[in-house]
Structure formats: C-alpha cells, structure tokens
Length: 115
Image (cartoon, rainbow, N blue to C red; front, top):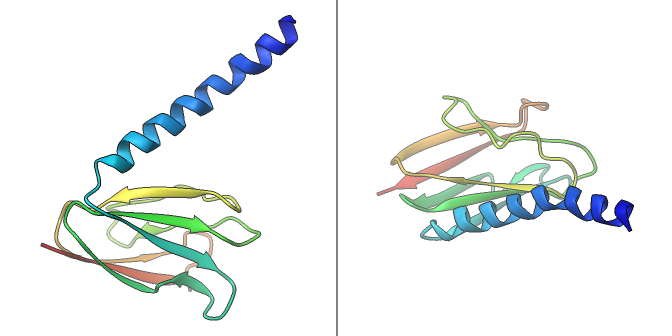
C-alpha cells in the first residue's frame, strides 16, 4: 500500500503542470498550432503563421527525435520537445518573429504577430 501511495504522490507534480498549462492556455485569445514534421515539407508546418497580439502558438513534435523552437531574437524558447510532446507560447508584442529549431538550425519558421 505504501508503494502505491508513493507512486501516486510522484504523479502529483505532473498533474499540477497540466493544470498550469491549461490555465496558461485559457489566457490566450486563440491558440494556433505548428506541427514539427518529417512528412512532406520537413520542418515546421505551417512555416509562416499569422497571429494576433494575445494569441498563443502550440508547437507539437510529431517526429521521433527531439526538437525545439527558438526565436532568433531570443524572445521565446519552447524548451526541448521530446517526441509527442508540445509547448505553448503566448505572443503579446506585434512584429515578425523568425525562429529556428535549436538542434536543427536549417529548420526555420516565422510567427507574424499582428495588432
């Protein structure tokens, strides 16, 4: 019984992270999705995404290796996205935000944040 309680207690931080991620996503006006893929055009799909101030972008790693999305101006970094994982970034400042994959610099994309 004690082992079972210990295993359940170990899952609590992950549940809290899920709640925090959900709360953060609710602050977004709209959440858009960028898929990291090796099918068709390799890389970020769509390669260029237009959003509005207050919108969020969710990067989803649909490949079998780790990736990330890192703004060239360092204004955001998704952190390492393991296969099947995702991360959400909120955009509050208008402008063009080119980005790359940290482990794979030839993979590039751009977020265009409109007022």
